Image 1 (tube, helix red, strand yellow):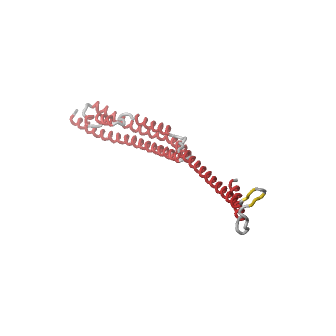
Image 2: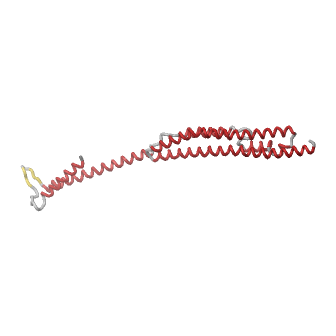
Length: 238
């Protein structure tokens, strides 16, 4: 409607200007019914009104652009309504709990040092035969427990895969419907958190498996040392 009004006013102005042109030689002013009519003044007023309407239209467009910009900024600041932080923390806590349940020699420097001094190093072979037997049995329990712990950690991480898959599907779905930069960034951060959790699970499996392998190797070395000690005692008749 505004465009039609503007076109009508502009056309009227052009007609008035052509009427007042030199070809028709119309008078600058005329008196009709006691009213003085000036065509030039009339056309000037029409052009002024057209320009004013055009300026108003431009201002309306600027306000519309500003409103659109504000709406976009509001979307960019809108937070993502979906979060999988609780599920990730629960999975990490489960893996951590499995690691803390290690039997025999735990994942602690002091416990490792103490356990090796008692069952795997030279002092473990200096006692009576009953002590040698007890230490050998303790070493066997360490190895069996370590392999059991590794299998528990592996089973726990496998059970986490279902929850991880659900979390990934949820975050990917939320990212596809993100309406602003903040929501997209938060979705990306949560996907990175899921990836970090998977890396932590992988590190836990490698740690548990490595612990089992090292205790098995230490048990084999201790068994060899014990065999030499038993042979020495046998030769001496102890």
